[in-house]
Image 1 (cartoon, each protein chain N blue to C red):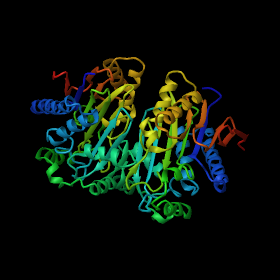
Image 2: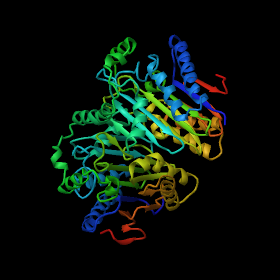
Image 3: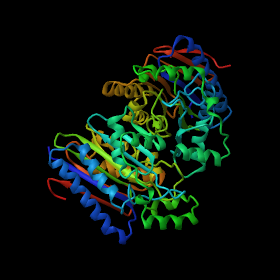
Image 4: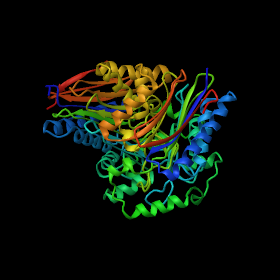
Length: 294
Length: 310
């Protein structure tokens, strides 16, 4: 079984000045994740490593470099899912944690629950010794400036969300040598979001889904639209009906565009090793590694 | 438009309902379905019908939603709810919200008054305040019964998941109005003695509920974590999109949940033509439906009582 790892760093109109850093970032993360697979590591380990690398990279809206909510604070969401058992861990609206994807994994492995939110998620993090970091270490100058800018003309204009706003959620999907698939997605959400806003990223079936029977998906783009069509699960339902990874992704993204006027992107890997990186936004930073080819 | 419209189906939780609470559960869902039915007959929308129905169930202390919610491990009430509009796929949800009487109402406001689909915890409460929603003392949501069960399940050898299975249930409703629009609503206090901040299936779109005019609407109940892992509501609708009936699709979804993950649950399902089903893999699920002036209801597997709604 040939291992595959695909990562994305967000689907949106990535400005030229961020383009190179975004591509470099996803390439590095993909390689780091793939090295786990090469060593015989699991798909779950690989996606966690890849997403951690993206969270630590300030160019992306996840962990470090996350956008700020209306109150100028950082609230993070993440999900991780194991296609072998359907075990899942997710956190929403968690603060002061550098690697939400790892906290999500801890929810999956150390609790009988699937999802923890907010204060409860933070209490859990404390209880297992995950260190909290001051908000300032997660906030970049760039994001602080952007928040200031948008604070002044924030009117909740839905149309703008789709095209101009940053949607650089990060994610990864993997197929390991044992034939197991996994996915992980992490984000700081959308800039100037309402306090406590939860987007698609930590929502099972929307921001991500993994099932050894059909494949693993991680999504990015306009969160509220992805939620409405349960994008990850939709893509996999088409694969279940026999569509290829590319067709399934394209059809689903098109459906999202037609039905709810939302744009986004998805990375998919099937249990047989086929993969795709598809998007309806102007750009999407992505990278895949398969048989040592990036 | 078929003469099967309008229709509303309600559930009051899947699991095992102790004898002494059976009557409360059945009368609760029947009263609520009457409310939904009246709204639909008067030309009201399926969204109005499901929301008003669930508000009534939240206000009824016999159910695990709003007043009567189970307590988390700290003895506090954190509630989750979702609404979804099948016409536009618009949806509103709240998770881990405190001190409000009607989370379903807040979920609807998230859908109608914000550009978001889900708000959690303190953010959800902030939004409630901004909407002028009254904050209620936690005590008003806590019943003797839920406090007693919380205390019992604090014991180290207690098994809250087993104990949970149904004694007080998540509530929900689905409906199709005279225009053929479908909607769903689900509300809960969550799992007995859950960790603080635990979010179950209820506010998760595709898991606790889903509504799409192109296929139908579903509201679910049962073991939350398992429902989430198979995105039960969306799974059932995928089956319907492929031509299965409301019963078959619901049964297939529940069977997958049981065979793959050993979880039990129940659903109420409608299609846009007005076909409906109330199905469950647990021992019981209190449910009621209203269609063509007839009220249907049941509790144990295979039960199906009917009476004139008037």
